[in-house]
Image (tube, rainbow, N blue to C red; front, side, top):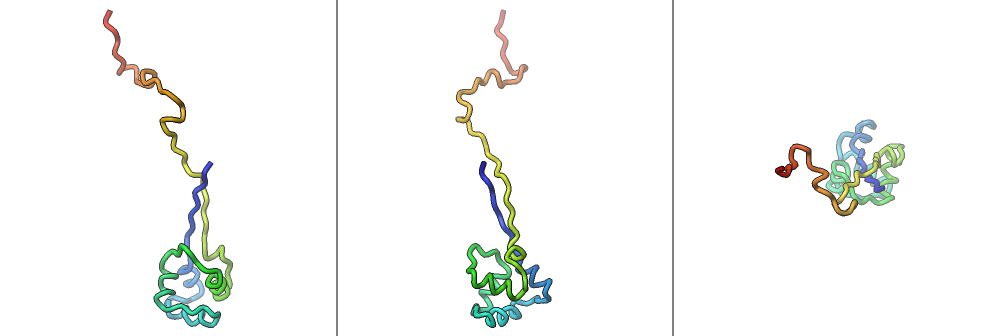
Length: 108
């Protein structure tokens, strides 16, 4: 069975709970921890959903907000729906699948 995984980036929520509402307030906090990002890079980090994130940046964010990575990244995994294909069961008898009304009766 296949599993479908997804995640939600929650940096803006964590920022708001700690009273940080502007991106420019986050830039010097990151710089104090050796992460030199421009305002536009931090803006993309906070407002978008990053597909790649370096561990030093993640560690700095966790230090700034005294949180764990699990609080910044909410993950979700569920079983994927597997669709049957026509080749799964072999040949199909269409007459057996038609409703009774649709069958033609031979003339006597």
